Image (cartoon, rainbow, N blue to C red; front, top):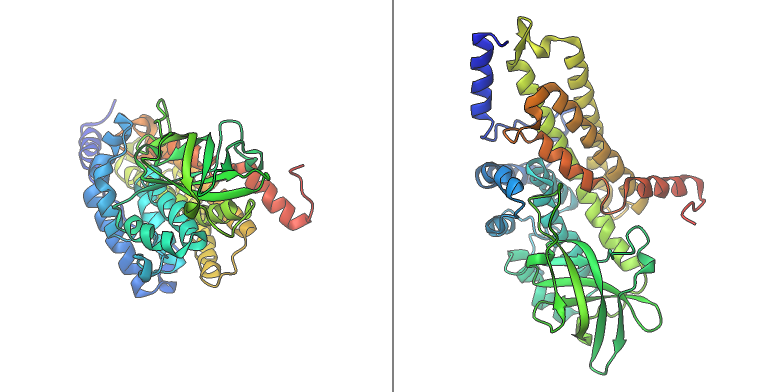
Length: 408
Protein backbone atom coordinates (compact mmCIF):
# COMPACT_ATOMS: atom_id res chain seq x y z
CA UNK A 1 0.00 0.00 0.00
CA UNK A 2 1.16 3.53 -0.78
CA UNK A 3 0.80 6.30 1.74
CA UNK A 4 -1.43 9.22 0.73
CA UNK A 5 1.65 11.38 0.39
CA UNK A 6 3.42 8.71 -1.66
CA UNK A 7 0.45 8.42 -4.02
CA UNK A 8 0.35 12.21 -4.52
CA UNK A 9 4.06 12.40 -5.31
CA UNK A 10 3.88 9.46 -7.70
CA UNK A 11 0.85 10.92 -9.50
CA UNK A 12 2.59 14.30 -9.80
CA UNK A 13 5.65 12.63 -11.28
CA UNK A 14 3.53 10.60 -13.72
CA UNK A 15 1.76 13.77 -14.84
CA UNK A 16 5.05 15.54 -15.50
CA UNK A 17 6.62 12.57 -17.24
CA UNK A 18 4.91 13.44 -20.53
CA UNK A 19 7.00 16.60 -20.51
CA UNK A 20 10.69 16.53 -21.28
CA UNK A 21 12.26 17.49 -17.96
CA UNK A 22 15.77 16.35 -18.84
CA UNK A 23 18.67 18.14 -17.18
CA UNK A 24 22.19 17.62 -18.52
CA UNK A 25 24.75 15.81 -16.35
CA UNK A 26 28.45 16.64 -16.63
CA UNK A 27 30.24 15.23 -13.59
CA UNK A 28 33.75 16.01 -14.85
CA UNK A 29 33.02 19.50 -16.22
CA UNK A 30 33.67 18.44 -19.79
CA UNK A 31 31.76 21.55 -20.87
CA UNK A 32 34.92 23.48 -20.01
CA UNK A 33 36.54 21.78 -23.01
CA UNK A 34 33.76 22.74 -25.43
CA UNK A 35 33.68 25.93 -27.46
CA UNK A 36 30.84 28.42 -27.24
CA UNK A 37 29.74 27.21 -30.67
CA UNK A 38 29.54 23.64 -29.43
CA UNK A 39 27.35 24.70 -26.52
CA UNK A 40 25.11 26.80 -28.76
CA UNK A 41 24.65 23.89 -31.18
CA UNK A 42 23.79 21.59 -28.29
CA UNK A 43 21.30 24.01 -26.76
CA UNK A 44 19.58 24.66 -30.09
CA UNK A 45 19.24 20.93 -30.72
CA UNK A 46 18.04 20.25 -27.16
CA UNK A 47 15.44 23.01 -27.30
CA UNK A 48 14.11 21.72 -30.62
CA UNK A 49 13.99 18.11 -29.41
CA UNK A 50 12.16 19.06 -26.21
CA UNK A 51 9.59 21.14 -28.08
CA UNK A 52 9.03 19.18 -31.28
CA UNK A 53 10.02 15.54 -30.77
CA UNK A 54 9.80 14.50 -27.12
CA UNK A 55 6.03 15.16 -26.88
CA UNK A 56 5.26 12.84 -29.81
CA UNK A 57 7.98 10.19 -29.69
CA UNK A 58 6.18 7.71 -27.41
CA UNK A 59 3.11 7.73 -29.65
CA UNK A 60 5.31 7.31 -32.72
CA UNK A 61 6.99 4.29 -31.14
CA UNK A 62 3.69 2.77 -30.05
CA UNK A 63 2.34 3.20 -33.58
CA UNK A 64 5.60 1.96 -35.13
CA UNK A 65 5.74 5.01 -37.34
CA UNK A 66 8.53 7.45 -38.14
CA UNK A 67 7.30 11.06 -37.76
CA UNK A 68 8.34 12.37 -41.17
CA UNK A 69 7.11 15.87 -40.31
CA UNK A 70 10.26 16.36 -38.17
CA UNK A 71 12.62 16.10 -41.18
CA UNK A 72 12.70 19.88 -41.89
CA UNK A 73 13.49 20.48 -38.22
CA UNK A 74 16.38 18.04 -38.30
CA UNK A 75 17.76 19.94 -41.28
CA UNK A 76 17.30 23.29 -39.53
CA UNK A 77 19.39 22.25 -36.50
CA UNK A 78 22.18 21.10 -38.82
CA UNK A 79 21.73 17.36 -38.23
CA UNK A 80 22.03 16.45 -41.92
CA UNK A 81 25.69 16.39 -42.88
CA UNK A 82 26.96 18.67 -40.08
CA UNK A 83 30.56 18.40 -41.32
CA UNK A 84 29.75 18.87 -45.02
CA UNK A 85 31.29 22.15 -46.25
CA UNK A 86 29.08 25.16 -46.91
CA UNK A 87 29.89 25.06 -50.65
CA UNK A 88 27.80 21.88 -50.83
CA UNK A 89 25.01 23.17 -48.61
CA UNK A 90 26.25 21.76 -45.31
CA UNK A 91 26.83 23.62 -42.03
CA UNK A 92 30.61 23.06 -42.19
CA UNK A 93 30.86 22.09 -38.50
CA UNK A 94 33.54 20.01 -36.82
CA UNK A 95 33.34 16.39 -35.71
CA UNK A 96 32.63 17.22 -32.07
CA UNK A 97 29.59 19.20 -33.20
CA UNK A 98 28.42 16.16 -35.14
CA UNK A 99 28.80 14.01 -32.03
CA UNK A 100 26.95 16.51 -29.86
CA UNK A 101 24.03 16.59 -32.31
CA UNK A 102 23.82 12.80 -32.37
CA UNK A 103 23.88 12.71 -28.57
CA UNK A 104 21.00 15.19 -28.32
CA UNK A 105 18.93 13.29 -30.88
CA UNK A 106 19.50 9.87 -29.34
CA UNK A 107 18.77 11.27 -25.91
CA UNK A 108 15.25 11.48 -27.35
CA UNK A 109 15.23 8.33 -29.50
CA UNK A 110 17.72 6.08 -31.29
CA UNK A 111 15.48 5.96 -34.34
CA UNK A 112 15.58 9.72 -34.74
CA UNK A 113 19.36 9.67 -34.42
CA UNK A 114 19.55 6.82 -36.92
CA UNK A 115 17.64 8.86 -39.47
CA UNK A 116 20.10 11.73 -39.13
CA UNK A 117 23.27 9.63 -38.96
CA UNK A 118 22.30 7.59 -42.02
CA UNK A 119 21.66 10.78 -43.94
CA UNK A 120 24.96 12.28 -42.76
CA UNK A 121 27.51 9.47 -42.53
CA UNK A 122 26.15 6.85 -44.88
CA UNK A 123 24.71 9.00 -47.66
CA UNK A 124 26.19 12.51 -47.67
CA UNK A 125 29.65 11.43 -46.54
CA UNK A 126 30.27 8.92 -49.38
CA UNK A 127 28.78 11.29 -51.96
CA UNK A 128 31.04 14.08 -50.69
CA UNK A 129 34.06 11.79 -50.48
CA UNK A 130 33.69 9.61 -53.56
CA UNK A 131 31.12 10.93 -56.06
CA UNK A 132 31.82 13.05 -59.12
CA UNK A 133 31.71 16.82 -58.73
CA UNK A 134 28.49 16.97 -60.76
CA UNK A 135 26.79 14.47 -58.45
CA UNK A 136 27.97 16.35 -55.37
CA UNK A 137 26.60 19.63 -56.67
CA UNK A 138 23.29 18.05 -57.64
CA UNK A 139 22.57 16.01 -54.51
CA UNK A 140 24.38 17.35 -51.44
CA UNK A 141 22.55 20.69 -51.05
CA UNK A 142 19.17 18.95 -51.28
CA UNK A 143 20.24 16.29 -48.80
CA UNK A 144 21.51 18.94 -46.37
CA UNK A 145 18.22 20.83 -46.52
CA UNK A 146 16.12 17.70 -46.13
CA UNK A 147 14.49 18.23 -49.51
CA UNK A 148 15.91 14.81 -50.36
CA UNK A 149 16.44 11.87 -48.03
CA UNK A 150 18.83 8.99 -48.50
CA UNK A 151 19.64 5.48 -47.33
CA UNK A 152 22.63 3.13 -47.46
CA UNK A 153 22.58 -0.30 -49.03
CA UNK A 154 25.28 -2.68 -47.80
CA UNK A 155 23.70 -5.40 -45.62
CA UNK A 156 22.01 -8.23 -47.47
CA UNK A 157 19.63 -11.03 -46.40
CA UNK A 158 22.50 -13.56 -46.43
CA UNK A 159 25.42 -11.25 -45.61
CA UNK A 160 25.58 -9.05 -42.51
CA UNK A 161 28.92 -9.14 -40.71
CA UNK A 162 30.60 -10.39 -43.90
CA UNK A 163 29.80 -7.73 -46.51
CA UNK A 164 32.50 -9.09 -48.83
CA UNK A 165 30.14 -11.97 -49.56
CA UNK A 166 27.50 -9.68 -51.04
CA UNK A 167 25.49 -11.05 -53.95
CA UNK A 168 24.16 -7.78 -55.40
CA UNK A 169 25.80 -7.29 -58.79
CA UNK A 170 25.81 -5.04 -61.83
CA UNK A 171 26.83 -5.56 -65.44
CA UNK A 172 27.99 -3.11 -68.07
CA UNK A 173 25.40 -2.06 -70.64
CA UNK A 174 27.03 0.82 -72.50
CA UNK A 175 26.19 4.23 -70.99
CA UNK A 176 24.61 2.57 -67.96
CA UNK A 177 24.85 -0.58 -65.83
CA UNK A 178 22.20 -3.16 -64.96
CA UNK A 179 21.85 -3.71 -61.21
CA UNK A 180 20.29 -6.80 -59.60
CA UNK A 181 20.08 -7.91 -55.99
CA UNK A 182 18.60 -7.03 -52.60
CA UNK A 183 19.58 -5.23 -49.42
CA UNK A 184 17.95 -5.65 -46.01
CA UNK A 185 17.63 -3.79 -42.67
CA UNK A 186 17.92 -0.41 -44.41
CA UNK A 187 17.06 2.64 -42.28
CA UNK A 188 15.19 5.40 -44.15
CA UNK A 189 14.55 3.08 -47.12
CA UNK A 190 10.75 3.45 -47.24
CA UNK A 191 10.89 7.21 -47.85
CA UNK A 192 14.39 7.64 -49.30
CA UNK A 193 14.82 9.55 -52.56
CA UNK A 194 18.29 8.14 -53.16
CA UNK A 195 20.23 5.09 -52.03
CA UNK A 196 24.00 4.74 -51.82
CA UNK A 197 24.38 1.12 -52.90
CA UNK A 198 27.42 -1.15 -52.83
CA UNK A 199 27.54 -3.97 -55.38
CA UNK A 200 30.04 -6.16 -57.22
CA UNK A 201 30.99 -5.56 -60.84
CA UNK A 202 31.73 -8.28 -63.37
CA UNK A 203 35.23 -8.63 -61.94
CA UNK A 204 33.91 -9.19 -58.38
CA UNK A 205 35.13 -5.75 -57.31
CA UNK A 206 32.88 -3.85 -54.88
CA UNK A 207 31.80 -0.46 -56.22
CA UNK A 208 29.51 2.25 -54.90
CA UNK A 209 26.76 4.06 -56.77
CA UNK A 210 23.71 6.25 -56.26
CA UNK A 211 20.37 4.67 -57.15
CA UNK A 212 17.47 7.12 -57.39
CA UNK A 213 13.79 6.60 -56.67
CA UNK A 214 11.86 6.35 -59.88
CA UNK A 215 14.42 4.19 -61.63
CA UNK A 216 12.49 1.28 -63.11
CA UNK A 217 12.89 -1.96 -61.15
CA UNK A 218 13.93 -0.21 -57.90
CA UNK A 219 11.58 -0.66 -54.92
CA UNK A 220 11.81 -0.14 -51.15
CA UNK A 221 9.25 -2.25 -49.26
CA UNK A 222 8.93 -1.42 -45.58
CA UNK A 223 9.73 -4.01 -42.92
CA UNK A 224 7.12 -4.50 -40.20
CA UNK A 225 6.93 -6.26 -36.85
CA UNK A 226 9.92 -4.65 -35.13
CA UNK A 227 10.06 -4.55 -31.34
CA UNK A 228 13.02 -2.17 -31.57
CA UNK A 229 13.58 1.16 -33.34
CA UNK A 230 9.84 1.38 -33.77
CA UNK A 231 9.95 5.14 -34.44
CA UNK A 232 12.33 4.55 -37.34
CA UNK A 233 11.45 3.53 -40.90
CA UNK A 234 13.24 0.33 -41.94
CA UNK A 235 12.95 -1.43 -45.27
CA UNK A 236 14.52 -3.42 -48.03
CA UNK A 237 16.12 -2.32 -51.29
CA UNK A 238 15.15 -4.49 -54.25
CA UNK A 239 16.86 -4.18 -57.65
CA UNK A 240 15.40 -5.93 -60.67
CA UNK A 241 17.33 -5.01 -63.81
CA UNK A 242 17.69 -1.40 -62.66
CA UNK A 243 19.40 0.84 -65.20
CA UNK A 244 21.86 3.07 -63.34
CA UNK A 245 23.69 5.78 -65.33
CA UNK A 246 27.45 5.40 -65.19
CA UNK A 247 27.79 8.97 -63.91
CA UNK A 248 26.07 7.74 -60.71
CA UNK A 249 28.92 5.31 -60.01
CA UNK A 250 31.68 6.51 -57.69
CA UNK A 251 34.62 6.71 -60.09
CA UNK A 252 37.68 5.83 -58.02
CA UNK A 253 36.84 4.01 -54.79
CA UNK A 254 36.98 0.20 -55.06
CA UNK A 255 36.66 -2.64 -52.57
CA UNK A 256 35.42 -2.59 -48.98
CA UNK A 257 37.42 0.53 -48.12
CA UNK A 258 34.55 2.71 -49.36
CA UNK A 259 31.65 1.29 -47.33
CA UNK A 260 33.83 0.69 -44.26
CA UNK A 261 34.91 4.34 -44.21
CA UNK A 262 31.24 5.31 -44.14
CA UNK A 263 30.59 2.90 -41.29
CA UNK A 264 33.47 4.39 -39.32
CA UNK A 265 31.83 7.80 -39.56
CA UNK A 266 28.45 6.40 -38.53
CA UNK A 267 29.91 4.37 -35.66
CA UNK A 268 31.57 7.52 -34.35
CA UNK A 269 28.14 9.16 -34.21
CA UNK A 270 26.73 6.15 -32.37
CA UNK A 271 29.49 6.39 -29.76
CA UNK A 272 28.15 9.85 -28.92
CA UNK A 273 24.49 8.98 -29.44
CA UNK A 274 24.46 6.08 -26.97
CA UNK A 275 25.55 8.50 -24.25
CA UNK A 276 22.31 10.37 -24.90
CA UNK A 277 20.26 7.24 -24.14
CA UNK A 278 22.24 6.66 -20.97
CA UNK A 279 21.84 10.26 -19.84
CA UNK A 280 18.09 10.19 -20.38
CA UNK A 281 17.65 6.98 -18.40
CA UNK A 282 19.94 8.16 -15.61
CA UNK A 283 18.14 11.51 -15.42
CA UNK A 284 14.76 9.78 -15.25
CA UNK A 285 15.89 7.32 -12.59
CA UNK A 286 17.56 10.02 -10.49
CA UNK A 287 14.46 12.23 -10.42
CA UNK A 288 12.17 9.28 -9.73
CA UNK A 289 14.38 7.99 -6.91
CA UNK A 290 14.33 11.38 -5.20
CA UNK A 291 10.53 11.62 -5.34
CA UNK A 292 9.43 8.01 -4.81
CA UNK A 293 8.95 7.24 -1.10
CA UNK A 294 9.14 3.78 0.44
CA UNK A 295 9.59 2.81 4.09
CA UNK A 296 9.33 6.45 5.11
CA UNK A 297 11.92 8.05 2.87
CA UNK A 298 12.84 8.58 -0.82
CA UNK A 299 14.31 5.44 -2.38
CA UNK A 300 17.31 7.58 -3.35
CA UNK A 301 18.29 7.31 0.32
CA UNK A 302 18.82 3.54 0.19
CA UNK A 303 22.30 2.17 -0.35
CA UNK A 304 21.49 -0.14 -3.26
CA UNK A 305 19.75 2.66 -5.16
CA UNK A 306 22.72 4.96 -4.57
CA UNK A 307 25.03 2.18 -5.77
CA UNK A 308 23.12 2.00 -9.06
CA UNK A 309 23.07 5.78 -9.53
CA UNK A 310 26.74 6.22 -8.61
CA UNK A 311 27.82 3.51 -11.04
CA UNK A 312 25.63 5.01 -13.77
CA UNK A 313 27.15 8.48 -13.59
CA UNK A 314 30.64 6.97 -13.37
CA UNK A 315 30.16 4.97 -16.57
CA UNK A 316 28.52 7.92 -18.33
CA UNK A 317 31.47 10.13 -17.40
CA UNK A 318 33.97 7.61 -18.74
CA UNK A 319 32.01 7.37 -21.99
CA UNK A 320 31.82 11.17 -22.29
CA UNK A 321 35.58 11.46 -21.93
CA UNK A 322 36.16 8.71 -24.51
CA UNK A 323 33.78 10.34 -27.01
CA UNK A 324 35.29 13.79 -26.55
CA UNK A 325 38.85 12.55 -27.07
CA UNK A 326 37.72 10.56 -30.10
CA UNK A 327 36.16 13.74 -31.46
CA UNK A 328 39.47 15.55 -31.10
CA UNK A 329 41.20 12.76 -33.00
CA UNK A 330 38.52 12.88 -35.70
CA UNK A 331 39.02 16.62 -36.07
CA UNK A 332 42.73 15.97 -36.56
CA UNK A 333 41.97 13.09 -38.97
CA UNK A 334 43.89 10.76 -36.67
CA UNK A 335 41.07 8.57 -35.33
CA UNK A 336 41.53 4.95 -36.40
CA UNK A 337 38.69 2.55 -37.23
CA UNK A 338 39.77 0.42 -34.27
CA UNK A 339 39.51 3.38 -31.89
CA UNK A 340 36.03 4.09 -33.22
CA UNK A 341 35.06 0.42 -32.78
CA UNK A 342 36.17 0.52 -29.16
CA UNK A 343 34.08 3.61 -28.43
CA UNK A 344 30.99 2.29 -30.23
CA UNK A 345 31.15 -1.05 -28.42
CA UNK A 346 31.88 0.38 -24.97
CA UNK A 347 29.36 3.19 -25.06
CA UNK A 348 26.44 1.14 -26.37
CA UNK A 349 27.04 -1.61 -23.83
CA UNK A 350 27.30 1.04 -21.11
CA UNK A 351 24.01 2.63 -22.19
CA UNK A 352 22.18 -0.68 -22.32
CA UNK A 353 23.27 -1.58 -18.78
CA UNK A 354 22.19 1.84 -17.52
CA UNK A 355 18.79 1.39 -19.16
CA UNK A 356 18.34 -1.92 -17.33
CA UNK A 357 19.44 -0.54 -13.96
CA UNK A 358 17.22 2.52 -14.41
CA UNK A 359 14.25 0.27 -15.14
CA UNK A 360 14.88 -1.52 -11.86
CA UNK A 361 14.87 1.76 -9.94
CA UNK A 362 11.48 2.61 -11.41
CA UNK A 363 10.15 -0.86 -10.68
CA UNK A 364 6.94 -1.63 -12.56
CA UNK A 365 6.65 1.97 -13.76
CA UNK A 366 9.84 1.42 -15.73
CA UNK A 367 7.97 -0.57 -18.36
CA UNK A 368 5.33 2.12 -18.96
CA UNK A 369 5.43 4.54 -21.88
CA UNK A 370 5.08 7.43 -19.45
CA UNK A 371 8.84 7.03 -19.12
CA UNK A 372 11.42 6.57 -21.89
CA UNK A 373 13.41 3.73 -20.34
CA UNK A 374 11.87 0.64 -21.94
CA UNK A 375 11.82 2.33 -25.36
CA UNK A 376 15.52 3.19 -25.03
CA UNK A 377 16.27 -0.35 -23.89
CA UNK A 378 14.52 -1.92 -26.87
CA UNK A 379 16.20 0.52 -29.25
CA UNK A 380 19.65 -0.23 -27.91
CA UNK A 381 19.15 -3.93 -28.57
CA UNK A 382 19.35 -2.93 -32.25
CA UNK A 383 22.10 -0.36 -31.81
CA UNK A 384 24.36 -2.93 -30.11
CA UNK A 385 24.02 -5.10 -33.23
CA UNK A 386 23.93 -2.75 -36.21
CA UNK A 387 26.91 -0.95 -37.74
CA UNK A 388 29.01 -3.92 -36.62
CA UNK A 389 27.87 -6.32 -33.92
CA UNK A 390 29.14 -6.16 -30.35
CA UNK A 391 31.30 -9.21 -31.00
CA UNK A 392 32.73 -7.93 -34.29
CA UNK A 393 33.89 -4.72 -32.62
CA UNK A 394 35.51 -6.78 -29.87
CA UNK A 395 37.43 -8.74 -32.51
CA UNK A 396 38.46 -5.52 -34.25
CA UNK A 397 40.05 -4.36 -31.00
CA UNK A 398 41.57 -7.80 -30.49
CA UNK A 399 43.12 -7.78 -33.94
CA UNK A 400 44.42 -4.25 -33.39
CA UNK A 401 46.19 -5.07 -30.13
CA UNK A 402 47.53 -8.50 -31.15
CA UNK A 403 48.11 -8.07 -34.87
CA UNK A 404 46.34 -11.40 -35.46
CA UNK A 405 43.13 -11.65 -37.49
CA UNK A 406 40.58 -13.82 -35.69
CA UNK A 407 37.87 -13.37 -38.34
CA UNK A 408 39.09 -16.28 -40.45
